[in-house]
Length: 193
Image (cartoon, rainbow, N blue to C red; front, side):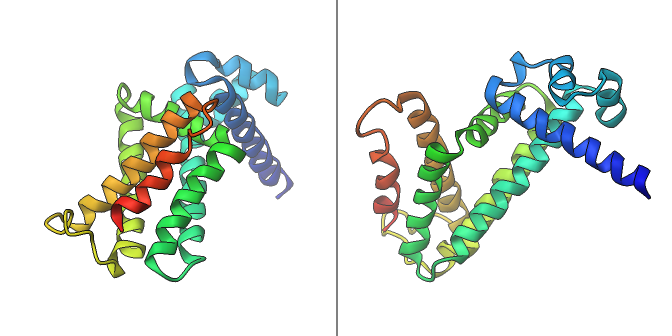
């Protein structure tokens, strides 16, 4: 029993270290050896648990995806009406940028890697699908859509909302020095209402 718990703890330690390394330096700038050194384990342990860098990054991304889904779901459940739900999504992305930029950076890096690695692509597609579906069911199901958007499906509007929040967040990460960098996020909710 202790051996199994030790393996879980070792694996979890490696995952947490990999998350820190990847979110602060990016996939292209981190080697398996860097992660092993930072975690205080031998390189062969990383290979034992995750086979290669892609396998390790995939597990880190799965962990990240669960965190995103859980946080977004909590935000949406914390308020009752549609306007407040859209506002809570906007606030979530603002808080993410301000308080947990590493998670957003990892998401951005994962998006870039997904363009080249098919195994990442399927995970990212699932994450975007899950987030869009959550927005569609929790936000748009009760909402009267702006007349300019009424000819589109709620699924398309949910993807628009998610894409706008994500895309603007990337721009803010690039322009964070500007005084009005967060203004476009606030416009997202106004456009839909």
